[in-house]
Image 1 (tube, one colour):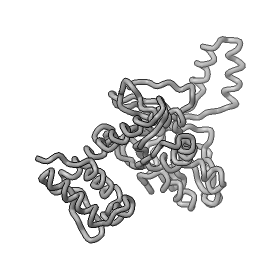
Image 2 (image 1 turned 90 degrees about the vertical axis):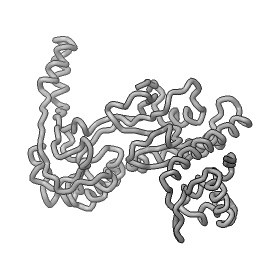
Image 3 (image 1 turned 135 degrees about the horizontal axis):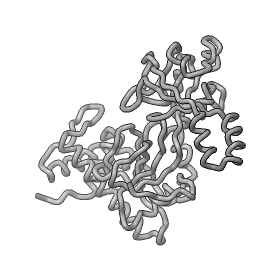
Image 4 (image 1 turned 60 degrees about the vertical axis):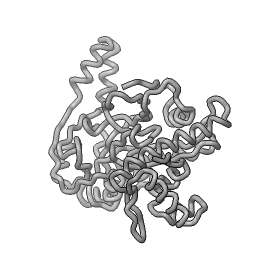
Length: 330
């Protein structure tokens, strides 16, 4: 069997990424027929069809999916070698493939990336936003962002930020329906929330009474730190409510949009609500209550263990993470 050329693999991967031969050809500076010939040669070398061609788009065959994953890994390695050939030691260069959840990527990650690219002129970025749990090795991803309380073993993880969920609503909605004073009022109001996986209609909230905490702290100075901690725990009120599933959505940005339009009270992560709270289209509800598990976690940057972490990966993580946060192997 003839060895497939790296050039043919590069064209094939670009066709898949672009979604059509014509779009890939424009990006590569060649004709669509030339791009098609490259892919045909790759298929001939491998002895299998990789793409299902239509007049408007292409779709991967079953073997094509496996070949595409292998091609992206090989191309990433080739770019890395090319970058190392002309780079100073430790200089971030080459293509960095990043995967992140959709809403988090849009609201938190994307605004922070232009500064990274401005700082490292030799760095190229391919950002894929998906809520699917990607396989870093199989899909050729350098670093992924995952929001979780616990991570699967076998990856190195570095915390980026805490993720807290909060209740928000449009001012007009609260003017019509009233502002709930306690979690017990929530079941009678239309609520919008994530409706998949561990997320569901049963919410547990804990009251955070700042005045009580202050008074307890004063008492703790006389009784000692341990007594202070115990008294605070005893005074904390925890409530579990069942919220009927009026609307469930599998995307936080969509929940924010519906809440801002007055559809109900949305339960969303703070990064998704930040813009609406800043511009006044949303206001926070039940601020003295913190939503507990599973609506809480940490955003981590994760990558596969390696003795020599690529400068591009380290630069990406260092740019996003607080300096005091240490890496930890899960």
